[in-house]
Image (cartoon, rainbow, N blue to C red):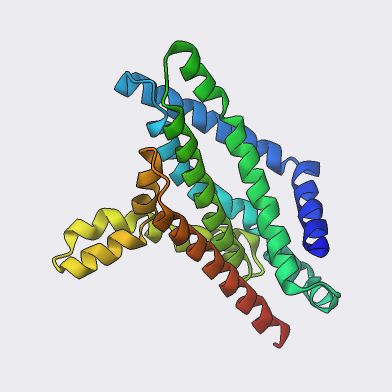
Length: 237
């Protein structure tokens, strides 16, 4: 774990010594403010549902842009071979990179804490729903980052890795909305269970659904495993 912790700190520092983290924070807070305004004015309720729902799809597009450099830069710069010969366990490398980006996600989400505070000043928001909604969004971030790392491991072009990450994630977001177009009941249910929206819904209602948590964790560890296999295959090419 000491090695993973060192990689975590190094990767997180890289974010903040470049303008990248600050640009993402600015864009994310701008979007959050816009969605917050839209939600309050359109519903007339002291609710964060619209803001948090739209932030979910926004993160689907933004996070692959954060993860796209993690392995693609190493492959393009010719340092991948050096990284593979270093006395660093592959699991520690993956865990450090994944956790550093997830920590940045936590900072992004914490930055939106201003908006629940505004609601509390003018109204009486349901803090249980607020807490579970943020928990669901954080679990979603973990899954997005894992898929983004996998896409980055497939190419030496960072932009291509970012686009591929979106291509991988987007079907898991929209598949639930297309389930009603399918006649077979078992296929409709399969599509529904594959959708991020299905598993985010309980959290948006103030419910901590252990099945939904298990789904997010399975998705996350599944893509981390695929990333591990992808890197391992490159080691022997």
